[in-house]
Length: 150
Image (cartoon, rainbow, N blue to C red; front, side, top):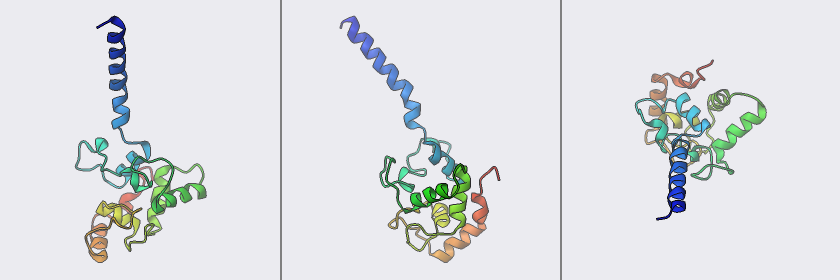
């Protein structure tokens, strides 16, 4: 093997190793949402999980990017209503409105509690609405989702 091939192989390996943390880390808004709604609790590796607040919580694509589902559109409307607002405040106001973005009869806050997707009507909690509401209230209700800076 010549020196150029060795050098290129080493450079490529270095780039892969340096980019690994960025690929594995949750994007900023997913990280903030997971912490705010408690999806970080009980799993020491939650930041590396694609299941913790996946991109499709707000986006149409599993990879994120342009194209938002109904819950994502609710957040976007919140930012338009309050330009410059912090993400946690906008998320809380959207959840506080007790809306059901995807129209599946479960308010968005309850879907976070049940760990289902508030932007996808096919992703529904298994419990009945009354049972889930009682569990949610026993766990702290909407105030448990208040931004930590409040």
